[in-house]
Amino acid sequence: MSKWKRYLRVSGMLLGVLAIILALGFVERNADRTPLHDLQVKVSGAEGVRFIDEASVRREVLEQGIAVMGTTLGEVDETRIEERLRSIPCVAKAEAYHTMDGVLHVKVVQRNPIVRVINSDGTGFYIDDEGWTMPTELAHPARVLVVTGHLNEPGARDGVIDIFSTDSLRNRFLSDDIHRLATFIRSEPFWDALIDQVVVRADGQFELIPKVGGQRILIGDGSNLEQRFAKLQLFYAKGMPMTDWRRYDRIDLRFADQVVCTERTMP
Image (cartoon, rainbow, N blue to C red; front, top):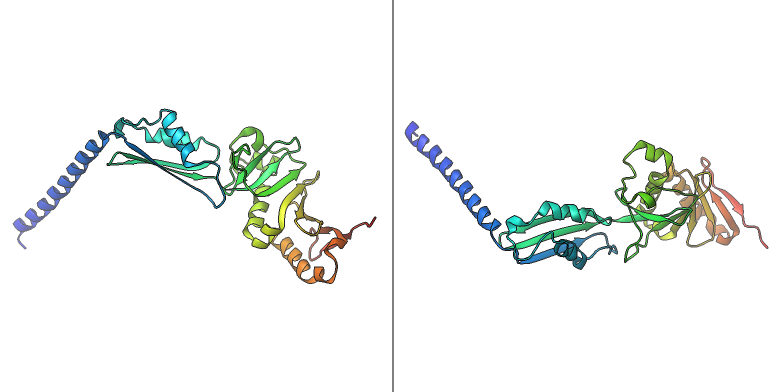
């Protein structure tokens, strides 16, 4: 191929790219002048999570005046829409974009709570799977693990916070330990089905309250969860079939290679 033909080929490719860029710019400018005529909303989340619905999102976008039907797409502040929706405590993610046919699309992902914390004074909050707190005053409460006892955690008074954000928060409070325990219980179907309440004692130790048996299961400070739950599972498999579940008042898993049981005092 001669240098002249090679030059013509490269020039043709560059002109083609330039034409595509100009065409895209023309299409985008025309799209910005297209009137907004529809709002499509999609709300997603974990199964059973129903904190916010499509109608609520539509009200936030339209009734707050962030987007107005009939205005051009170029006038719609999609960044403001996303910021507004992310400010809602139960919303983890929000995305807003438009298409050239005049439709505004809004997608919302709800937070996925895994534990409900109830402080000693009765105030409470949820912690989601990513470690963010959220209020409990919602239309549809979540059915999750409940932690009560000697607690004064900041999520109830400080709104939406990241429990892993600062070392001082983690050192002074138990929210990160609660999150780790709830995550572990939730990850194992057997424990998730068996345990629905945890009590924090005055010394900061965790006690599990199973749905059956009536025992209190002491697991300590929330460390070494894999080993302690493995001991408990072995005890359930090997020890419990040999006796009545109701015989024991407390099961203590804090000691290495031991399961210490306290018999219930009979009236």
